[in-house]
Image (tube, rainbow, N blue to C red; front, side, top):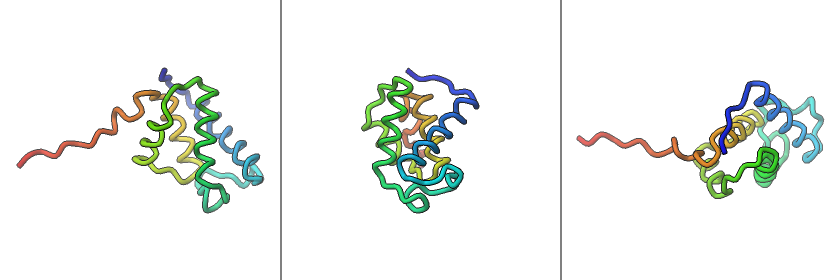
Amino acid sequence: MAVKLSEAEKRQIYEHIRQFLCEELDVPLENIQPHMKIIDDLRGDSMIYLELVEEFKKKYDLHVEIRVIGQYFQRHPVYTVGEVATAVGEIIERGDALLSDDAPEEKPST
């Protein structure tokens, strides 16, 4: 089930991610900013992305397969806190249709 998030909800997602990273990575909350790279700057690992997605899947009762989310991340890599917040918002808003707009563009025949 896809939903449309308000700007306030998107901000809540961002703040939730910051709090999660603060607790999981033992980084002061004030040091976690949108431009910071989770792996390089905050010393996280690739599993942190999966943990975040699982947390939001539960919170928003999403039934998107992890395989679909993995494909989305392959097509739309995320590195920073801000990019993760945007991606989580996309997953929540688009649900099962997450990959529907990602079809490769057809090249005109010549």
